[in-house]
Length: 213
Image 1 (cartoon, rainbow, N blue to C red):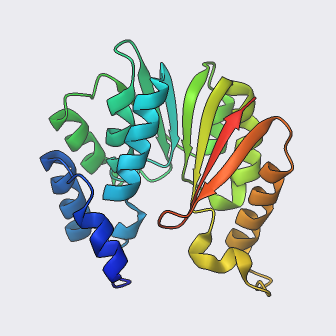
Image 2 (image 1 turned 90 degrees about the horizontal axis):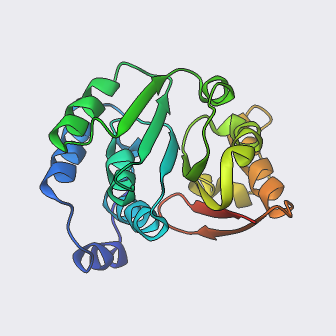
């Protein structure tokens, strides 16, 4: 794991702490799973919560549930009558997410769908105010194009990992590195899309904030 810089430590010390539930989930994810960096974590989670609270979405869609950290942050801004739909292809880790959704008393507000996100999206018949994209980087453009018609005017898509460990600015990309190529193509695709406005937050691995016009 990359060691925190003194600036990262300072930022952490001057940001509101995780609540007990998120702290426990963070810790359990690190203890149980071999790739815990996939979890959103404190700072990114607070940003997701802030966007959700500002937008006050009726419906949220999340691509990539993992252990449920980001969903628990996003659901905090959901309207009382709202719903969060989260999709993940790996049902083996969802037991952790379900356990914490129950602990947070939001299990009735969150619908988990298991399967390939691009295929599940095809079956959705609902409009969303907020979408968090964090699954299958090689299909980011495909999923983006499917999601945009489902997004309300003024709604937001937040795409994670758009800096991809800095590989997006490397001069040479390996021929078989489809993930890096996919992220670079996605970033350019959105940049050229007149249907939206966009910017990148250099938080963790990069978050692109996309607003539908």
